Length: 371
Ligand code: GLY
Image 1 (cartoon, rainbow, N blue to C red):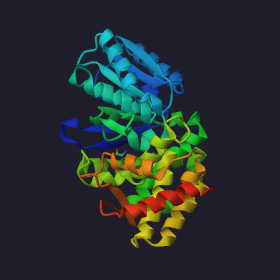
Image 2: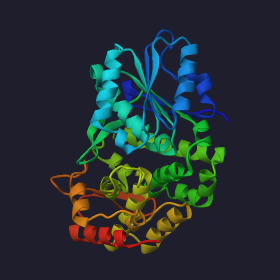
Image 3: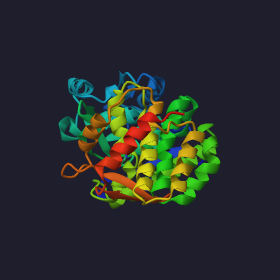
Image 4: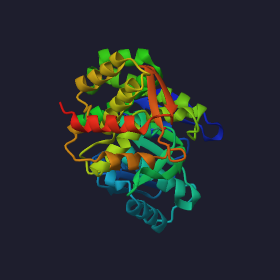
């Protein structure tokens, strides 16, 4: 497979995403610095530790100086103040320098945690994203969002800090659990729903081959998603406008994740799938979007094995608590919740103009429904 390069053009903070197979063997080609003698701090989780160890070996053979791996338990709970402090202490104990490099080797959790640690230690050291999940390759590793969760909700402490390189290696899909793959697929569908009907139609036909890890299909969706994300991040790096569209389904989804307790009951992408269905249902209820479009999206998620109702999660949640979490969402303005709503598949927009009673109805209905 030929390696593709997608450029994120942000002036002095520009970088490339390499998309291809067997990229570890030629890692030096995708790093914008010399490996020789450099101190390197690799952060990973227990699911993908073997991959991080293979990277460590390659870097050591290429002449890296200090090159060690810190391993955390997989799962959303790792994105915490406690783990952040552990990373900082580990880096400082080993005398990290401003020209050292941090490698985030993992999914969205490790990418966000390691990126935030890199952003804040010594007021910022360079970091490389090596995303090992579909969700991380198509979304979280690109665009520089870093952060941790707090008891008040998801990603509420963090910043925008761009990596110096992103390396999306198709080899990681050989071992990625099917549930993780499907959860990441929800973020792929998002690009079709917000502004690319053709891509959504392509996914309706070819989605199953992505989940079956057909290399041509999966590298195509990573390529299309990264290009779509690059265009949005280049236009609005710090989410003052258009970038908020990438949060389709996330206001609802983050509230569900918080209610589920970050214990693996609900993966981020699963929350996004349910939240996206709710965003469509809300758009229909408000008379903005044809019901047929909402049903079509729901059907596609179902065919792909994703949950579409909060009642599918197997937890108890109270509408008042979900609303309180949604009001604390980063996108809220003057205590008004922000939503990404839909005019049609491929046409999303951002608004605060949403009646709270309708949001409550949509939440109550989704909590009740089960398939
Ligand atoms: N995951 C949404 C964004 O990066 O803006």
